[in-house]
Length: 299
Ligand SMILES: [Zn+2]
Image (cartoon, helix red, strand yellow):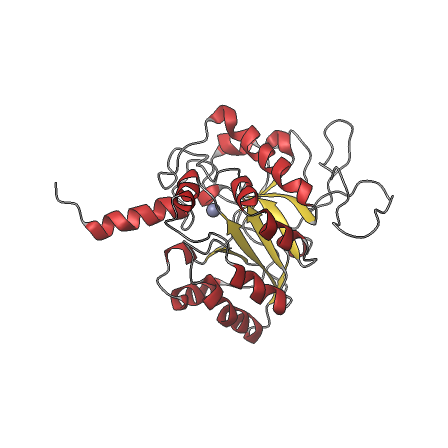
């Protein structure tokens, strides 16, 4: 059999990156209408998930009771899926996924790649004071505790859950290794346990690896009281061969209320930092203002 080496290389990239165009889904169609975060209803044993500690990582703990985390939903409720925020405003959310599969971790161990943390990207966001939301895998936070602390230490950055090891929650997701149906709930719960000790602006937002989910995957998250966030602008940064395609992908799709999906994984999304200044300039020209997910979804 003749194997096209370029096709093989692309397949490897797809597997390693794990994110991008959503794979065909067997579950319900994603919600396409604007979703405005409703205030969670507090009730006995099925109330919203609350933070177990101080929400802000520095400063005195205010004794005003536990804060309800953004995205928290009643436990036992089939999670809502959000693709974007209100279309009638001027706000957009820039989100950055921090993937870390076992294969990526192995490449790091073998010294085949330098880093999956894009520090230059963080520096640009920090210097320009751009709000952003980071969907972090448990394995990435454990690989980069210092970088995770840097993220949570920024009052403009929110942290959300992107699974523990970036495995597939459906059977047809970029050939990523599969999370068994019995292990889905624990995978996501374990990630919250890995992220929560870092403090900062924690949330109950969750994004599936590769955006792959079906009814069974959503139902598995019901005990956790989360809101699932897909996004409506796929930047394609893990596949890009330069910054221009990333800039064009974002600016050609973005509109008021958009949730933009990018990556903070330097070794397999190496042009995101180069693309960011032009993306920010393009948003500014259109009068679009980057905000955190919780701010976007609050209306
Ligand atoms: Zn991802």
